[in-house]
Length: 244
Image (cartoon, rainbow, N blue to C red; front, side, top):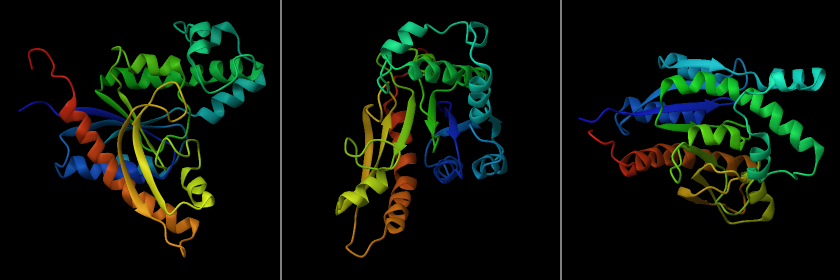
């Protein structure tokens, strides 16, 4: 029997999608093992969920790192030794490269991402799952997970039917636009904002009487079904390991 797929997870909050993935692994619905759960925020409920399931946890406190960068500035000694800043600046598609704030954003995030990578890489995972991780990943980080050209290894879930309503408030945007169909999307992560290849989607009807809270709850229930199914799809379609 092949070894289970080794998954890493990153969260920022309560971890309900993480719990759905934990349950799917524990009940044998997907042949995978969660190796760790990392968070950018200390003390969130998702860390408790992981610890209860016997999963390794860690925190890289983005807020503290970014505040320190703002207060003390960023010197070359603070940056990762392996960051090609000009290349990262050219690859990123989220911010104006001529805006001076872009350089600070990329440098401060790379400092945090280096700490993430130091935690993640020793686990030698097959797939990194963003289970409600509310931080933008820069090309510096992405290129160190997606090491084989053309093979994506970072998965994210988005609260809208992409390519409609990318960004941070997918359910809110869907509701305010007056859509009668909402949904969620699991996609791979690339250098853009929710622009990576789509893996799967689930839709739901929005009734005239639904509130925004109703839409969010319907969406979450679909997310909990979709994410484990997309992880299973990734595992079944993954290239075979030579000699396995």
